[in-house]
Picture 1 (cartoon, one colour):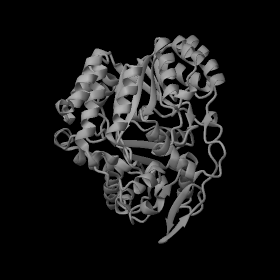
Picture 2: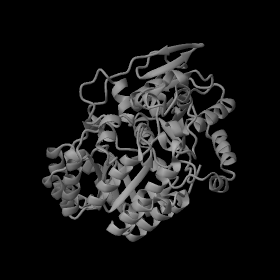
Picture 3: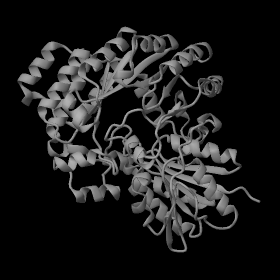
Length: 495
């Protein structure tokens, strides 16, 4: 029997979910192909600009369609987040026109959030809700026997015009039993990606921030008591030994939601990483998980950057809106421990929380000025369907029920600002400028005092703020930023 072939279509750079499913399916004897649009200027990666996107994407749709026609798949799959949902719908429809009898499957965080909204489209045959490895293989097993199976847990399927909703299966607990990510799937398209090797050692997060995808997964898997699972240290080291042997990775990024949450695991990992790998790496942290021992172990193992999500310097916003319970003193202490160990510190800030006022932004400014992080990464809040923050946004009239319905349909706009930023974009752009400018100038007191006293002098321009991001990266040797830029333009077989 010929191997069943799965064709993934994706808008973005690298997707760990696709890599995990591809590795599993290949282990089961399946053939997997990837077609992708890197979305350099229209995919939330570098700089969203409709004009530049039209220039750089010229002819990409024609090439993509030709590649789909050439592929000859047995199943077509899309990994979807809210921002690329409309794109995925468009290409799913095109694929169905080309291959009327080939099933089209949607998975990812957006279909997991609103599966009924997704399955209603007549050109979509199944939706995978939650983790997808086993569900995808079971769908293919059914196709081996000549038809789409109706009873596959973690899915909603359409059989003969009837929609069948199946219950979720338990979490995958033994992550070590599954193959390493199929990185080559994306590296064959964009070889520059491997210079900054991305992997994860765990799934799930010990925290439950209201704006995050993990907030959705906790709802889907409400019957589970423990939402965090982790690979053993030796399994991770085995993966990274192969990476080191290939010799292409200059840095390693552990994309876990919170990398340092387990001290015993971290102690074993850092000792073995230093002995066997030794490639500079960076990771993420939550302030209450940072200790003097953890910072020391990370530094000794070769960690050069820790990114810590703060999101707001306002305790009210963190507690009442984001459901982040750490105090300012905890954030200050954790920041000091990371910096004192000699590790570069990056802080994440989210603009646009419902009920956020200028006084909250000033509190953030005061906190960041006291901490003096090496980098401040600013983001615009995006509302995602199924997340708890929507309730708060409704209470504060920051969003309407009609807008929530539009979110479910993926109508977020690739070039729009998210969250509550839309109500006072100039104010937010000014504070983004101020955070970035303070970081660039070394948090000089006169800068803060001058701009807070004469706020009408603060620029409110997206392009100027992007220039500040680049200048900060140049000044501080931010290799993470430049590996990203390089990888985007190092294309080989796109789509």
